[in-house]
Image 1 (cartoon, rainbow, N blue to C red):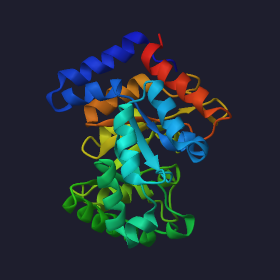
Image 2: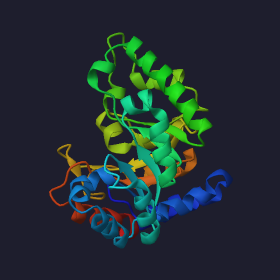
Image 3: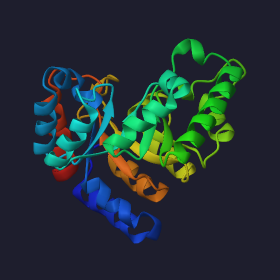
Image 4: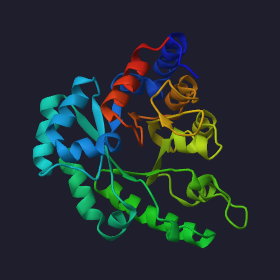
Length: 273
């Protein structure tokens, strides 16, 4: 569904009217990009790709995997381009086995959030597996808090699929993780894929979500640019403000022309009628 100009600015007004979310209304105008979208371009031309991202008007980036040849140099590059990196993805194993190294990298880049983005299938088969995952996330999250960071968990669609006994993994994630130490990053595409309405889900859990991936779904279920698909971003932005979301990242997992796609997506957020 297209995001009307009226709905877009109405959502900003709603956020600004609420004391706890007044600061977050400005963050949507400081639109971020999940750099997984341009991962191949970063590998071939790291500095040039970040420069092009900044020229398109993105002001925040979320790193995953490709950090450049030297992290301190990357921090300086971000500053020179007017970019910040408030969030950073690390794989579950790295966070579990060597959280300190991940936290150090996040600190150098000036990040405030470290995100667990994925769980391999053998690790998440049963209720007991998920209980163990929750225990581990609590431990990692407490360590992150001691380091001045916040741990967040990023969803796909498998968290919304019933396990053998009818329990959904996300129910366990909410009930068995300590909200002092574990927050969430909602990927609206994957939530929709899991037959969950993102805006309703955000409103139902207002204390848990701090990051959102804005990602659209074409009618055939594939990835597409924002505004070309079926997801209602007006309602999602409104619900995000109400739920205390602090950062929004455009993402498109696959595109034949990633730079064209991220240009179209930021243009949609700024000018769609």
